Image (cartoon, rainbow, N blue to C red; front, side, top):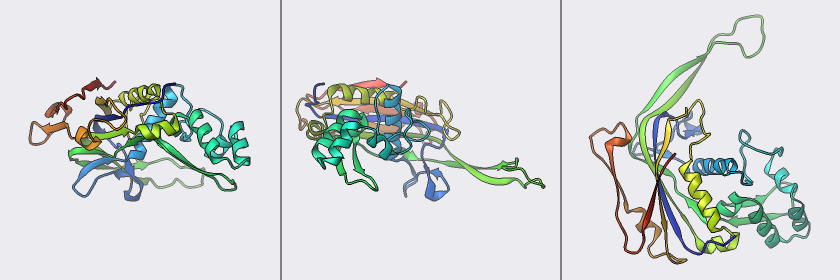
Length: 281
């Protein structure tokens, strides 16, 4: 594989309709908001979805969630210990070889990096990945609707009928979100992140919400509208990532936007840096 030799920036515009895109466990699982009322989706949640799309593509992924794993291992340590060459590097306390082998084996390690430090193990290796992903933020403040729900069945058999258990369910009525990211070539050289890996990441972004349905996020409630992809002509890039990301202009066309069509999206052109615009699926 050819190691990526030029900087890449990207941006993703997505919408949320009557769904909870990323609940906050410290706030009753309400959709995340910042202090200005804008909705947020954490970078961790976005990377989880990207990893799941990698799995859908048949790629090897180190950090698999319990409800989306494709192997029999019950922990990250088990998955690492099952790799024979990694075990040899661990016993030899060869951290450099350990990192190299881990990057070769798992696409998410060479993309996002990983800390390998497990209880009862002598190895402690940190890998910095070239792909950085920002938190997704809604263009406007979002309205959150909360509804009370009940469970009217006993969880276990008993002599008496249990009283209904009350709970709450929350959703964002509508929000148009955007998040940005970039791929650093210096770190790509260290992890072996390739041009083919970059293409797989692009496809994962386009299909971000495929096979991602849940009771909080029903099918069709979250949609990727556009992926913007800039490929620079050098390792450092012609422009800073901040300047590239600012070229995406999203403005509401009405006072209270209720759908994607209520927004105007334009991209300013930068001299010598074309943008590839891809529609979500």
